[in-house]
Length: 294
Ligand code: NAD
Ligand code: FES
Image 1 (cartoon, protein in one colour):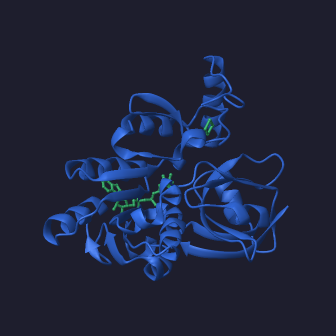
Image 2 (tube, protein in one colour; image 1 turned 180 degrees about the vertical axis):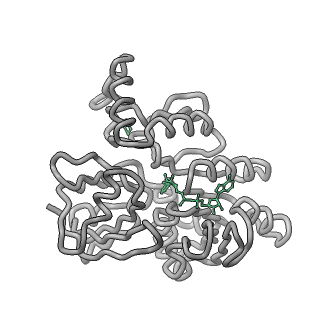
Image 3 (cartoon, helix red, strand yellow; image 1 turned 90 degrees about the vertical axis):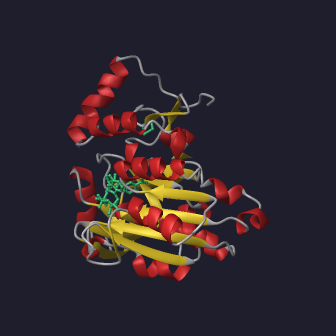
């Protein structure tokens, strides 16, 4: 069992939980995810790691209460325990393996949208701890839905806020702010990392493509079982089929077929629809990939 050490409300329906999971905390890296189950019969929920502290033996997750299982997680309190907390899973962000002197010469822009701000934090924190500077844009519907602003300000080189209604920072979408920074403020970047709703990542990709700015997105939101078995997270990248949970979750944004990914995401909106879709995948002859070479 994995004890919830701390629970904090970040915004309406969005909860941060610090989980006692020393083995996961020791080996976690930015970009990776965990699979959570509240009880033995519970649905497997893949969640991107939002922070980790090997000394305390804790891993932070941020959950938005959207479906049956995420509401179950969010209803737990500090002192309660999760039945399963498996990880770290998925490939770490590519920059973790890059030589630091090369990385330090790069101008990096992170674009974080809504709940997707939480998984951006460990990436910017890791870079900060390794002497690499990165600018961050956080976008949200309004000032009440902004999360992680103080934590991000502490590790970002520059933090820019955009709200759809203008209640804090720049008024407009993150894509408008990217254009403002590049066209009007003369900012230049070598790489962009965007994490947030699929529609945001699609339009960030279109925007950065026009500038020839290499962009990486995290497609975690496509995942269902997170093991390479259900087939739900299939995505076409550069014309090839990829499994988000095994080959990702991060991919070259300019190669991702976002329209297909959004159609696929729509298929798995509720637990019941997910179960039906998995059965359909199996009936259509989807083969389990566990134990197979990529
Ligand atoms: P949201 O709808 O409030 O959007 C956040 C920001 O994204 C907006 O403020 C806006 O600046 C930008 N955006 C939205 N639509 C846009 C468009 N068409 N063009 C340009 N920019 C646009 O975000 P939310 O409600 O917090 O989103 C929740 C979603 O994020 C969930 O569906 C969840 O699946 C996804 N999510 C993804 C990840 C990931 O790893 N990719 C992690 C956590 C959450
Ligand atoms: Fe099921 Fe990737 S989430 S195969």
